[in-house]
Length: 238
Image 1 (cartoon, one colour):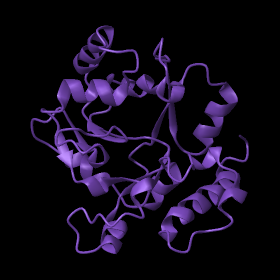
Image 2 (cartoon, helix red, strand yellow; image 1 turned 30 degrees about the vertical axis):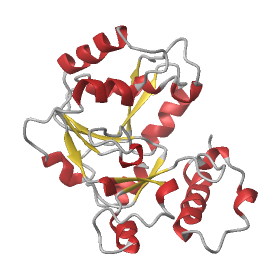
Image 3 (cartoon, one colour; image 1 turned 90 degrees about the horizontal axis):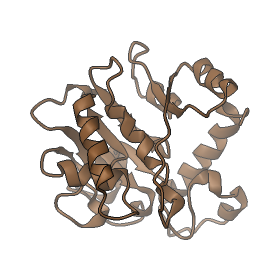
Image 4 (cartoon, helix red, strand yellow; image 1 turned 135 degrees about the horizontal axis):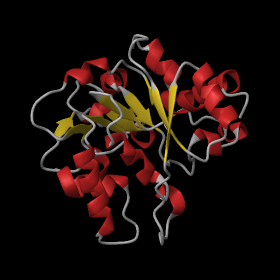
């Protein structure tokens, strides 16, 4: 992700900050520093009593709201592939608490995803999140749930093509563009999601995709290939 951010044109004077829980060993932190990112250690935030462990640690990302000296933050989940530069989002203004793309895949008018968030860090906002989590309505209540319950009507909605699920790649949805092909070209981020029994690329062995469906959108397979090619180059130490 960091390499793609720089390759998209983000200048070196805009730091790429990586939140890491304080149980991450020092040699990993040094690797992140060597990659010209800024690792910041945070306290884990693990949801207890959940039935699905997929998002059990996802609340930790909400510490982006804590004030750390940054005036504006563009947050990205790391399980995604960035195609286009996002620096223009630093200029998003107005009275919105945050900016995020609509979660089109849920079919609700007022629901945003948390893969991409544009925020002004605020300890007061973080306190609201913590208070809301103390009164969570159900055990399986995670980052996207609490953010939407707090601010679905107070946020600014980015167009859906800012974050598109990989499971959408082969669909004919155009999101207002003239064609599916144009929608794919204009997509900023593809977020790896479950499709055809395939999970995130780091959970999938390469041999599972040796045989491609010729009727499926080629970029779906290409995203896996791009990840697998970059992994030994950038993260051979893992």
